[in-house]
Image (cartoon, rainbow, N blue to C red; front, side, top):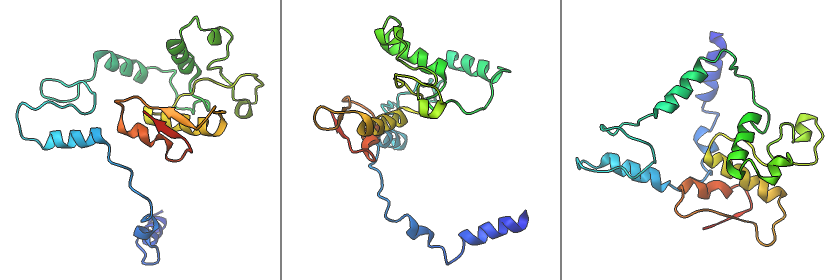
Length: 189
């Protein structure tokens, strides 16, 4: 094992591998204005400053404050003997995506009543099940990730009636404008 680790280390430290040159043509993403604001806040010595950056709850010492309900939910999850670490289905946890769809569309939505939304196994090529309806909702790891996946999906599979565009609210997170970097779709405020 030690000899294999030495081999790996020597490979990465070798003069034959141009590490810095490998990624030198990757452009930097534009700076996120919210994080720039947070950096400026932290650097400011004024004692009565107010953090207008990332929208997180803070205590009187300006430390992140975790809501009691979040702590309770975390405790429930950590102590759930049925919880495993298996991979979720390709579109996410069905109970989560169904609940999210009901929250967004309303439980009386025609699409929900017709079971056209967030159905487990609705991606038939992945699940092997037959369906007439694609899934409406999918679980992602973050808001930016969700926006990026949606932009990719829409740019490839949605038939636009005009230019390929998605609408972004103003104000919004700066990272949301990065959602279409790898998708041929335009952000519109």
